[in-house]
Length: 151
Image (cartoon, rainbow, N blue to C red; front, side, top):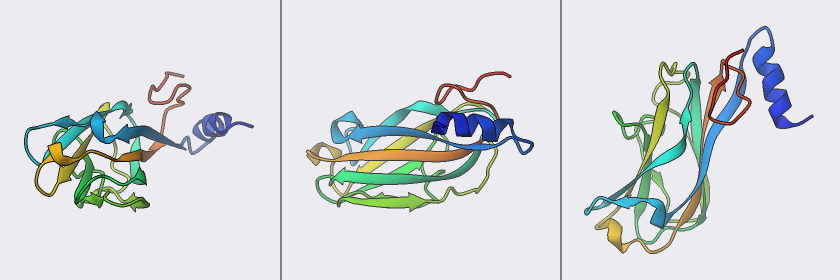
């Protein structure tokens, strides 16, 4: 049985919830340089309506140049999904983070904003690659990742 089938069965169960994620491979050049210390990126997939936040995980496969940290959030709070802290991404590692509000209900489709900050200037970053995953409990059967369907 595929993981997609398992999630569909969990979501159709009496509890009606399955674990899903929004994930994206990101390189240093994917960030938009704001002309200062920070680079920003909106992840392609969004958190769907009806989700409950679980947390996030960052796997750095190529260290970012210099002293760099990452905040995982949204347009109103840059650290919303990284527990009001930033993740050091200067070395290859895997780091897990709790959201500020565990099991927070997502009332509207939400874009995940990543903000990477260099100690002096984002333009000095010349290397780095990571996988960012944001996990949530789904209350809707999702047949295509990031796009809930009506049942």
